[in-house]
Length: 360
Length: 270
Image (tube, rainbow over all chains, first blue to last red; front, top):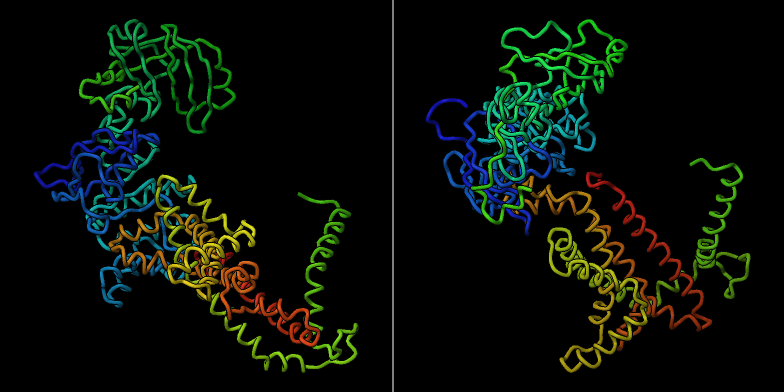
């Protein structure tokens, strides 16, 4: 988190939201620094989109406060808040041209025609859509619409830009390209970006910090490396990356310690040199081999009674070679510090009665 | 699915037959309006525009046409306001009885006109008349509005469902207040749906006869009623033919436009 006593761009205190009997957001406290690229990651139904909508002002919280730049905006309408949203389906106005869409925020603020046009063209240039201003949104591709939505939100220079699954509707190639572009754009404009995603890779590659949501609350906040390397709970370990957990007897046998431990697949060596100093060794049998181009994933049933996924780069092997390993016994080894202790879920002491159902 | 050759020809034949059955009689009406023979001998021995002149000079027909236009405009206005309000309520809000309201709004178009007619007739005579509202043009407008609301409602609802609720959210998010959102986003997106609904509603009202019969006050005669009451006077037959021909042409236009407007996507040309 960027240091300094500066007021956070977004601060949420004790935020809750219920829809009927369902508690979608069950107490969220969060501070997002100015200029940060912040990801809210979680499975669908984890409350991340509802939190985003409460920051934007589309939903009003059942309890708690929303502060933007230190100002309490909890009860303000969306048009009274200095945030803008890029919607999942972009929500472009179909009856307006691309330029009119981008100009919209300026038009309702009564900015003069010439000034409007100049700034809209500038915004379109920044998302590399110059020359398409006269088209209708219907005549654009998905990726182009996405950029129009970005330009439309950025043209009014909000303090915070909210993005709801911004890349969800794009195909893989375009998504990877837009990930890089979004990141570059954010650096360029220096606006705080808060984006919601269920794609852990997207969250890890793009953001400065990630909040992992689980059942209406935040399971962990940290840099991508922290969240990935030191998951705060079995849920985080499983959602951000592959769940490779050693517990109970397996943990005692292999690590000599009690508790739950996570070992990331790429940290494990398969059939390499014997385990040396500061390394843990294990034996097992290959249950499944999944060839995935640059890497191969081996599902190994340990003799100690757990199942681990091992990822190996395909430096010299071919698919035929690795497939032959199915069913064969293997030796595994990893550096002892790569078996990271994962705290067990927080006992539901701070849970109030009405939210207890969220933890099954 | 690809059909066999014979099936394709069979279906084409059936289609042609079906359409011919509907449209040939209408074509004959059009042709006969220029038929110089008073008894519509076929094929027409000579052609004339006399009937068209006579129809134009017929005061009864002209007054009836004007009455129909007034009734149609009134019913359409009511339908536009109520139909779009209900559509907004049903689309935007979750409330107790929402499905029931939706059904009750749709029902009048399915109810037999004679039932609506009798019910409205009773209502006007036994309830409204003592309150000082006599049957007249107003009762016809109300009667027509009961089923005109449906077409506006359907058109607006379909458009609202298709355009998604978050256009309003996007507008508010970009800084527009409620009034600006309505002016710049909600209304323009709905405009063509409203126009299509209005054209259909006007068309429905314009050729309505049953409900009109029951709700029209003395001296209120719409065009369909005028045609019906003159139908069996032999010397009026050529004039009626002309009026019918006019009605055919006049109803094709709004229906054609309405269909074009409904088909165009929300981002369409109109």
